[in-house]
Image (tube, rainbow, N blue to C red):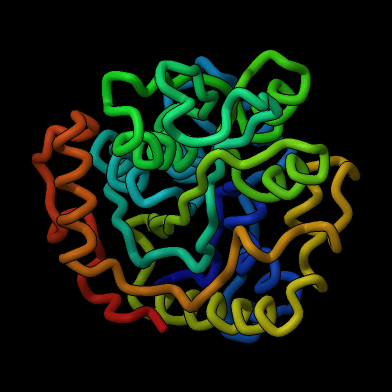
Length: 294
């Protein structure tokens, strides 16, 4: 390994971070000789505001200023952040969490994606909620009739939906399960993965040990999901019990290598929609030597 076995993680939402949480809780990282911890708390994330540019949000900012060595974010955003940032990081792997974003509503007039023609859908810009909403609605209403409404973190979007401030929101777990419990219905849902963004100072040996430990954590989660579900439901402040979290909208698998074919398909999609200028490539944004990361 390099000079230190310390790895600091910038927090995403618990549903995406669960393998890291379990790896720390069950001493899997420490058994691999790594000192892994979060560089901030989930309460700290709630300080992010709607008007913050993406690189100024907590996890991205911690990484950019060198206070975190890694974080996970949706596949499209991992490319976007690295292209616009100055950290010199790369995507080491596809994250273990395979989660759904779902468009929720309490409005009986909205039943199918076609009903969302020109209807504002609240998302957090430049995140999985934003990009999956585009993908869910493009074929149904056409690009020009997708109405993206800039909103805040998922718990705040759901609160806005429940209060009537928003007609439709895109959220992931635990807010899909909470919404269904509260009587909302799903208009559309889409599963996606994310990128594990790493800083340039982490060595190949650290990558290998970290992802081996994360994969062991995935095995524990899959063997006894509800032992750890309370971490995911914590963001509901008691509104959703751990045993009420549905298994249908998130699952976990061993991290995978971000291969050229998948990267190019994603990058072309982003270029076609003006999300990237298209001046990078797999060879510059992805850690080539982490083959399989399993």
